[in-house]
Amino acid sequence: MAGFFAKLKEGLTKTRENFVEKIEQVFTGRKKIDEELYEELEEVLIRSDVGVNTSFELVERLRKEVKQRKLSDSSELTEVLQELIAELLGEEETISFAKQGPSVILVVGVNGVGKTTTIGKLANQFKKDGKRVIMAAGDTFRAAAIDQLEVWGERSGVEVIKHREGSDPAAVAYDAVQAAKSRNVDVVIVDTAGRLHNKVNLMEELRKVKRVIEREIPEAPHEVLLVLDATTGQNALQQAKLFHEVAGVTGIVLTKLDGTAKGGVVLGIQGETQIPVKWIGIGEGMEDLRPFVPKDFAAALFGQPGEEGEF
Image (cartoon, rainbow, N blue to C red; front, side, top):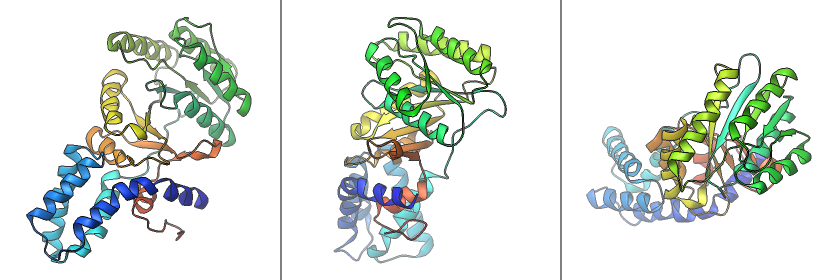
């Protein structure tokens, strides 16, 4: 994991320039902690895709800490803000698996965010962890999505359950769950369509898929993971709110964090939706999708060493 932290730190370079360096500009060059400083900080946070409500909350928390710690020098504020950000991000939350029988993970998100790729990487990771995995090509709206999932299946040696383009996604999910039950499979990862132009259709389709899965395995799906593209900034926050309303999202996978200046959206997502970010992607490789460790993210964001002292 040490190598991953170095890669995360490198991947967050643009976000650090857009976010931390601008914050430090607010804090340096002035000794006094006054109202003007708080207003400038709020503006930087909002412009860094943190979200209006979360920006207000962070500034209010900073005010309280300044009073409690009796701080008077603005140069001390960067460290305090890093602590508050780590606090806001919370503790690491892992994927929930079934205590017995197959675990079903439903993956949702708009087209183009890296959803199918994420499913392939998750399947590969779970297989490496010793789990038997099946992928279900539930995005029957696009033939390309089915083909792409098959390519990932071949790369990672994971079976893909599929129907023809235009088939009922719920029928694909049903077949995948049946296959998992009969073959002692540990994890079923179900892809879904990502079109948003008709929210009603999307809602009905996802409800039907969830209903069919639940009928076969009463506590399933055990996770509803929403894949978001970090490069879209505030748009990702809106998608999180919509999909949570539609599908009851239990965790977020944030992709394309490398090379974007909009990594601050992690704070907005966590702060404004209360949905935990569970995995992050910082590259194209199989190993570039990893569980989200909030403390490491905050350290990498501020250019600090990680838990193991890596620079």
